[in-house]
Image (tube, rainbow, N blue to C red; front, side, top):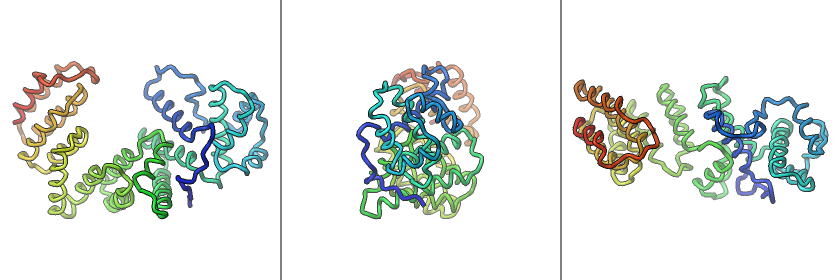
Length: 339
């Protein structure tokens, strides 16, 4: 079992606990867009490096270790960041070389010091599992489930002493390249889509007190209740609809509109539609909005209207970041067509 106190982690004088997360983020962005200008060492997959290669790279920085001697030296430290501070403090390296040496030290620690859990190593593993999950490369579902279970353990351990749940999750999230709340929502939603209602309910119950915006998890609860307690689902859905009317949260409104389509409630859909239209800011927002409206027309057998909307989509300038004018003629046509 992991035992990591986020509030009592050693404070590194130089080496930021978020540094590993920053390079994880850089590598993920580079994989999505290989045209990004990066140095090869910045996006290296250190997990795939052989141990002799890592030790050889460290020798270039006058750090001579074997697996055994590294383990002995690391006994005095609680994290790879503390260890890196000590090892690199007198070497007068450039910032680039210091970061590269840190990444190598971190990887050695991750492999060798498996009996000394620390937050940065846990966050790195969570990022790794989320990365595999997002790319549909997870080989064993137990790996991602174990990472989630360990996250739950860490959060619960840190609230037992009276810590604020939301702040504790934020503290853990600072060490991750991914947004944990977004991942938990996506993962739980997939469990619901796969009819794993029991596990999805367990996830909601375990994490809802830690998330800063509970309405997303309430929406997940609606999707579960639809299959078990329709009255309870309708009550919660009405609460979310009222909240959406005042929150001005575009992404949530879009998700809620999609959910309302499944309920076959045209009146509520059209009310929220008008409210959401005023939140659209860029072309990507408009296209997301358009897709939902096309789905609405399709489900209500409004073939003529659906065809009009599809024609709008085909004629748009698909520069997703282009600002959307509030008086965009296509938006006005869309709203009039759907009504």
